[in-house]
Each structure stands twice: as C-alpha cells, then as structure tokens.
Length: 157
Image (cartoon, rainbow, N blue to C red; front, side, top):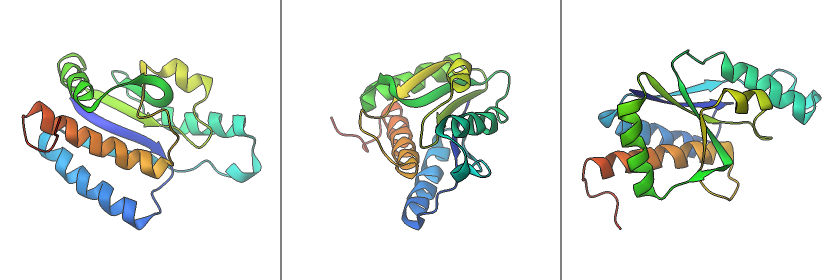
C-alpha cells in the first residue's frame, strides 16, 4: 500500500516546507508516501466560494485512481488519538490494495462531489488550521503512527 497526501496549492512558507520535507523522508523509511499538490484554480479570487470548491474538487478528482481509498481530512470527520490513528493505518495496510489517499480541501472545504467520492472522513482536530499547517500536522502524525506500529520510542503515552 502507498499513502498519498493530496492537497490544493503549494506550500509557500519555507519553514513549513522544510519541516514537511524532513518528515516526508522519515515516513518514506517505513512506507511508500507521496504528496501530490494540485494548483489553485485559475481566477479563484474572481469566483464564488461554491465555484471555488467545485473547481478544486475537479482538480483533485483528476488525480484519483480507480482502486483508491479516499479519506477527506475534514473537521466533521472521525477523530483519533495518535495510538488509534496508528491502529487505523495498520488495518488499512491490510485492507487497502493500492493507495490510501488523504485529501486536504481548499479554504472553503469540499464540494458535494468530493464528499460523494470519498470513502470516509477523518478530523485532525475540531480546530481550524491553515492548509500548510494541516500538511505538516498530518505528515508528523503519520510518522508518529509508523513509530508506534514499529514500537519505536518517538511517541510517549
């Protein structure tokens, strides 16, 4: 199984980009992992929130492969502790045949089309974070999950 983090728009904060890159290397030690960034929709400042969500969903869905298991990172999704998330990843390693795709939406969330295409939703927190922070938080939690699965001393209960 390969894990993919799919998101809209580039990481323009160099500090976040450096940390994301560092964790990306750590995660790839344990499991194939890839970040796919689709560009922001064209003329996004001149379209409504709804039109922006539809445009972003169209770009995100173009990357989808038929066997993908799609998980939206959504504030209304199921919440896990780090240990529970590690168990979740471990179960998915045995049940998802190809790609486990986690999706970060745009600033206004997901369109109905994106919700319809998803298999499930997970929430990293009930709080709202910037998309750059979500990428970093997610990849750090994925690394933490891998160390928990492998009984390594990164996570402390």
